[in-house]
Image 1 (cartoon, rainbow, N blue to C red):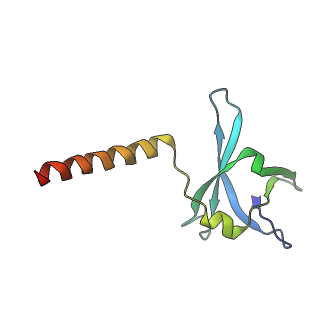
Image 2: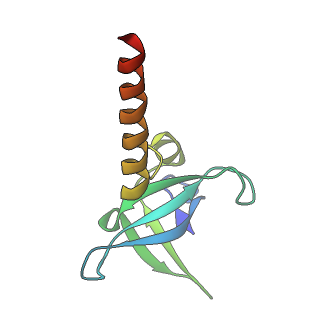
Length: 102
């Protein structure tokens, strides 16, 4: 669970993945924001130092200074593979557009 800023300290998302560097050190997390019962949630990437770990009764939660609105307006998280795939599709479509224009 990720608890956002504000007086009510409401849950603003769920940590779904941890981001590791090449040395297996945690550098960030992917937080699912919005949606209902896990459906329609948007994955958002957060730097590890943007969250603080808080021990609760039987679980661990994280807090952040970001609000629900800030997280919902953040860009959707994409892996490097997803970004590369989108870029290659864009390059292919641009290549096809230039050959049809000739």
